Length: 329
Image (cartoon, rainbow, N blue to C red; front, side):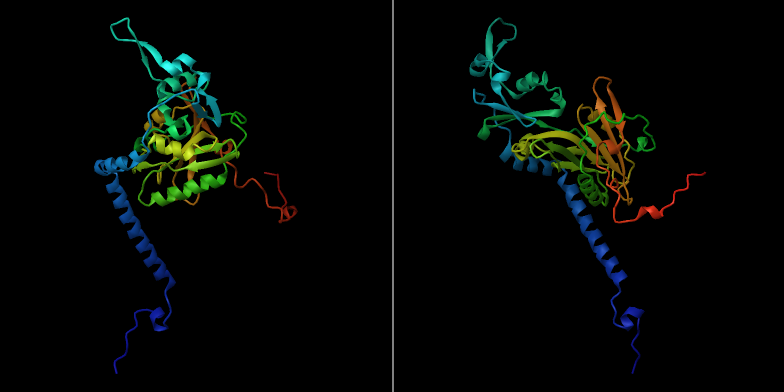
């Protein structure tokens, strides 16, 4: 009788090799993610994006039909349209002289005109960062914050930040660390491709809670662009007393150093901008900053000013008196 050949000790004793099983499972997962990446990459083609846009047309922007009952929903407030437009303007429209003529024509109130009048009281409603949406079912005008294209640059990877902001110059509320942890987990998922990813962070004035939203976007190794239609965003936010407080995006395996594209895109006052990098590390790196419109400068912040410190509370079940601190050098 021929002796049966044994290739390893595990098969000899009919024992499962857990390490080999784990490696096999990881390889299958890697192949699965690779296929997902190929599919995602294909979905970023102009042909697919145009078809995706057609699907979104179900929630396309509705034409403005302003009347005396219309209200503006901003920062959790319902602002009557009469606060910014007269009765004549609401009923007849806005007077405008025809080109090369003294004749006057009347134009319907549109989103841009509403935004311009609101901007006097709400400087955050800049045209580059705001879409004005009219929701007919609620007879409501809603400013929707939008984000510009972000990206990293290989040339700026070794640049170090030096500016800072004094403690106490930012609101006392901190974004829960749980939201940052969730975003890092999402970034780690896309790090396998690798790809950047973007999220918006809001504060609900009614519930006094922060929440995060992942909008529709096109993500690439070196950039990420928010592509979600304004009406889609409005439908998600219209029942919340929200205010946008920040944007966060990842630089996957690269350092979280703002690129020139980030500098161009992140120029709205009143919100923070965070970048998470080196997400393959056990503790990823993070950069946080704000933009000061008056000085036209970005100001770097300590993450402790924005996010809760997960290590702040010392556990009480340990007797720390056993630790003798030697203050001598």
